[in-house]
Image (cartoon, rainbow, N blue to C red; front, side):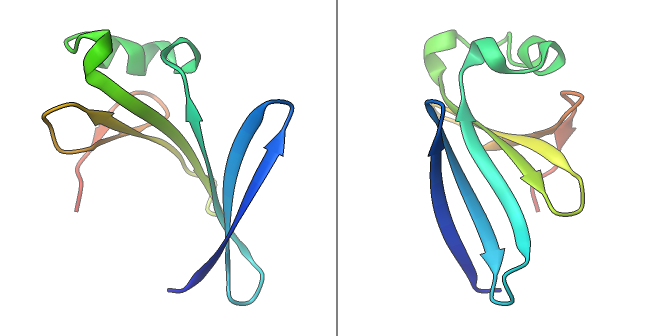
Length: 90
């Protein structure tokens, strides 16, 4: 599916929003700090040194899902639901 990406900067936050070709909202993502991730996710990431977590992106989708993509040095990217549970990558 082709999408249109729009980057919004508001109150110091950078949000990347995607729309489909009909103008319908698909998802919004934001890079967040370790201090701003849910405690359950923070607990699941506690095995990794803070310096090995390269980035955490919160993604909210049109079907009301929220998940977190986590990039860790030396590993495949990981995805977690908003409760901090790992989601298997397809």
